[in-house]
Each structure stands twice: as structure tokens, then as C-alpha cells.
Amino acid sequence: VQSARYRVSLQHRLYVTDDIYASIDINKLSDGRFLQDFFEHEFRLDPQPDNVIALTKLSENFTINAIARKQLNSFQDVTERLPEIVLDVKRHALFNSPIFYEGETSAARLSRNFGTGSLFPDYNSSRLDTFHQLLFPHTYFDWLAFTPRVGGRVTYYTKSGGYNSPDGGVQDTIGAINLGVPGGTPTLSGSARNLLVHQGSVFRPVFDAGFESSFKLSRAYENAQSRFLGLDGLRHVVQPYTDFSYVVSGQRPDTIFQFDRLNPSDRVPPLDLPEFTAVDAISNLSIWRFGVRNRLETRRDNNTFNWLDLDTYVDWNIDQPEFRSVLFSQSTFSNVVNRLRFNPVPWVSLQMEAQLPLISRGFTEVNTDLNFLATQNLKFSLGHRYIHGNAFFEDSSLVTFGTYFRINDNWGFSLREQYEVQDHTLESQRYEIHRDLSSWIASFGLLFRNNKTSISSTNKSTNEVGFMVTFTLKDLPQINIPFGQSPDASGGVKGK
Image (cartoon, rainbow, N blue to C red; front, side, top):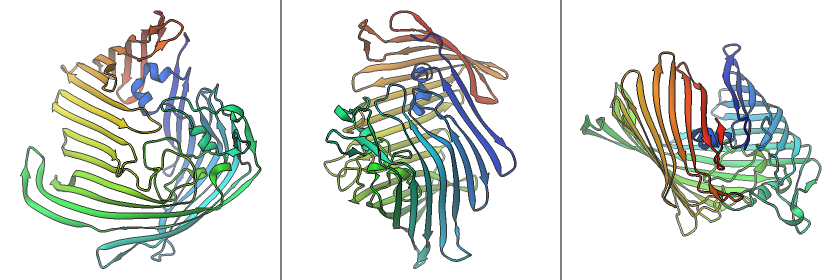
């Protein structure tokens, strides 16, 4: 067990002038399990925190970014950018015409550095990339919005290549890295392990075209009045929409080193360039999205308030991308995606995201979050994460519960519980007492965690019991000074 464990973290934004600012995000960790052991909530949100410094210049029609990203933690997989310069031209009318233009140009020195012990060798390349697109938004018949678009992208790489496959050919980097078992570490077998094939420079042109279209229908219900539900009249707005994207790439991504790449995910990626940011993974595709947005609006404080939002859509994969990735459905139609936001009153909010198979193929996922302020002194939160049938993620039905009780002006109590229904395990329990110290808040807590595994050498459970002492500065809530201890699997004590 490592005895000296630490985290050095710095997040800051400094405005040099009104339109130039520097952003700093530094996170130096002693080891790869530090966040998981001591800051589990942060680990779930961002398991691999960034180490980047950026300088940004803002203008009415463009933004310039200078970025430097470094692999400070050797156990993390990182794409270094030393440096990257990006010019992002915002969408605007071209010479006061009805035609709009948007574009992006970048130059970067990129290095894909894998963590210590990885089976994959590092690779690097310089990349020049430029993208330009024209759009013609127009409203027809005073109700139908239709926006065609056409664009092009040119990318030059000083190096290209991939991992060699067992049959002696070249295997694309993204396919190789994404191979593996659910919840496990990606692996390569046989002669493909740790061998990289370089194939020289690559020039890749890309053509893209498509269109977006939508219209709105609405109806008002003035008799919908309820103080309890926060209703002062109700208007139902229905917006059917469609988005078609067609992309032709002059180079398959098989032999392009994957820096800005697709990663295994349960999310459907954006269809349109430049929103599709996986520059190095661009491939031929034809995808047509059909959806409908439902919005319920009410009056509140002399303004229009979104009482409920529901976005539902499905993708028709006419021509699927030519590389293996869990991000794209392997059937003709994607899952039906639903995104719900319900905020009837200030003290209640509900969010739900769901994916359901349209036909027999696909996976099921439903994520729900409910926050409820029972009184001024008592708040509850309840969440549920359910996923089933995904090739890259284990089946799970995870329930989370939390509450905060304000005892008086100086004292408070909070708890957080996490229960996995799939194997009937209470994975995590956290109980804390909070004391207001004027400028600081001191927190004292106990942590109980069931890791559901055992250490083979000792055959002992890795269940943990720990205590925490945290001081948080009110004016800077992201800065805190933690201290705690928890026993390791062998019965010793490790510092927090």
C-alpha cells in the first residue's frame, strides 16, 4: 500500500483584458486510485481530470485558443497537445447576404501517451486541419424552417499508421483500443501486442452536406391554474424536426492515428460537422434523425417559464461509419432516445434520460434524478441508473439516495447511500456532520464502502471504513482541505 498519497489541484481563470483570458486546470495525483478511494463522487463525474493551460481571445465573429496539455500523471492515458492553436469562426452572415458561414482551423503537435503498463505503444504526429461550411437558413410558408448546408474539411498528418493484426495486416487504432470485455481492460492478442506500424504522411479531404428542418404547433390552456404545481396558464409547444447528415471521407480512419477519437460510450454522437469533434475518426456516413420536442410553458414573474421539456428522437443509419465503435448502432435504426426535464416549482426537479430499442437489437438505459426540497432545512435527492444489454458496459441497476438536514444556523447533517440492485449490495455509505465556522465550513464524516472484490493473496474482503475531516472555504467552494483515514484490505491504515 502506498503510504504517501496526495492531490495537488488548481483551477483558475485570469482575465488579461476584457476579451483575453487564461484558463488553468491542473490535477496532479499520487496514483490512479486516489480519486476513487477518497473522492468517489468526483471520480464518477471525472475519473481522469485534465492538466491543461489555455489562452483564449474572444471576438464578435471568432475565437482563438492556444492550448497546452501535458501528461502529468503517468498512469493516465492522455493526448498531449504541445501546443495546439485553434481559430473558431462563429456562424455569421456572409457579406450581409442570406448565406451564413462557419469554420474552424487548427494546427497541433499531438502525442497519444498511454498509461504505465499499457499494452499499446505511444504514437505522435503533427496535424493541420481546416473546416469550412456554408448554410442557407430560411423559413418557407411562414412556418417551415429549412436549413441546407454544405462544407468541406482538409486534414494533413505528418505520420499515420496502426497496430499490426495477427494476419500481418494493419488494424485501425480505434478498433484495437476498443477491443475488450465489458468492464475490463482492452487487450490485444498474439503478434498484435505492442507493435505499431508507421505508414508516413496522410492527406485526407472530407465532404459533408445535409439539412435541418422543423416547424412548431402550439395551443394555450388558460384554465390550467395551480399554485401547488406552479401553473399560471399553460402552453403546449410541439416541434417536429429532422436532421440529415451525409459525409464522404477521402481516407478511411483505419490508418489514421486516433487523437481526437471516438470512445466507448452509451451516448449517440452528434451528426453534424463541426459538432462531431472526433476529427480523426471521420468516416463515410449517411444518417437521418427524426425527432419531436414537446415543451410545456407557463407564466412566472412576468416571464415565460419552461415547466416541462421532452425531446424524443431516433436515427436511421442509412450508411453506417466504416469503423468499429460502440457509439454507433449496429442496426439500421438506433435506440429511441428520450430526454426529460421537469421543473414545476423551485423546490422540485426531475431529470430523466432513456434509450429503448426500437426493434429487437439495441440496449436499454434509463437514468433518473429527482431533487426535492421538503422544507427550508431538509433536502432529498434520489437517483437511479439502469443499463441492460450494452456490449461495453455491465448490466446495472444502481440506486443513490442523499439528504441534507440543516439543524440550526451552525450545524447540519448529510448522508449519501449507493445500492446496486443487480447483486443486492450496499456499495457505499457516507455520513457527515457540518459546522459553520463563519468563513469556513468544517465537515466530519464516516465512510463505509463495499468494493465487492477480494485480494487474491489474502482472500480478504476489500470493504472499507474511513473517517474524513474537510474544511471548505465558503467564497471558494471548490477549494477544500481534506484529512482522513481508512483501513486497507490487510487491516492496516492508510492516510487520506
